[in-house]
Amino acid sequence: MLAVIRPDSWNLPLFLHVLGAVVLFGATATVAIAGFAGLRWKDHAALLSRVAFKTWLLAVVPSWILMRVAAEWILGKEFPDKTPGWVDVGFTVSEGGGILLLVLGAIAWRWARREGTGRAGTAMPWVASIVVLALGIAVFAMSAKP
Amino acid sequence: MSTYQWLLFFHVSGAFLLLGGGAIAAALNLAALGRDRPSEIVLLFGLIRIAIGAILLGTLLAFVFGLWLVHEAGYGYGDGWVVAAIVLLILGNALGGVGGRRDDRTAQLARELAAAGDAPSPELRARVRDPISIALSYGSGLVLVALLAIMIWKPGA
Image 1 (cartoon, chains in turn blue, orange):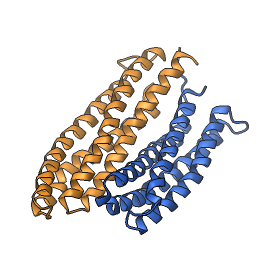
Image 2: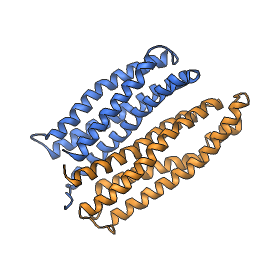
Image 3: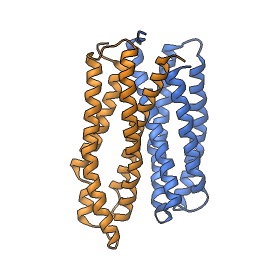
Image 4: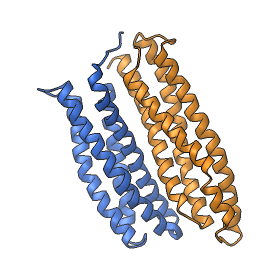
């Protein structure tokens, strides 16, 4: 099978889209890891709650914006009229995931404000894990394009 | 789905684990840079091990399925961008590996200090903020971003 060669003008938006997506994947996983670790090591829950919230604020939010803006940029070039199904999967995950990420940020903020105590710490890693799983589904749709 | 689609999925999944693992390690490392208590540094460096697992699995998947894709997609193993990608993958992992071994020694010192009263120590503070370790770890991350750029632009293909 011969590889498909993209026009050069698609490369920069694709690079930024993938870069945003991998950082989003790693940053959201970091929030989940900090949350689960906070449940296990209560002595360090205050530190881990700050790590989770700062990661959400400084890495999750900017990477989601980068991923989403670059997605729109390349979409306008590659599919100006009608989008295929695998792109719609990406939209569903990024927009649904965006809402979940806002919920995640609110929970992480509350957990950090309460110095790592309260029920927010129990919910946070699970919400983050759901987003990580959804991103995994998007990776399947975006790469395999079934 | 075709063989090409499956190979691309596993290759891209590997790239996500590799670069995502790098992002996890960077976030936890940045958090450790601001800490002084040995037990906190032990915890954060310990959590970085999860990222290392993702990086190693991602490297394996990206490399094996990437080589298979080169054959399946009709590229050549001697193509400049393929050779450059392999060199950057090895370089990125080598830099990260050397930086990681320095961090292991720092974590060992932090464990000893945590067991001996958990008091902050100037030596531990200096080791956590060691510019060589930081340059190796973040240099490794930059090399992996360059690798991603090569995979997308495929110069000369």
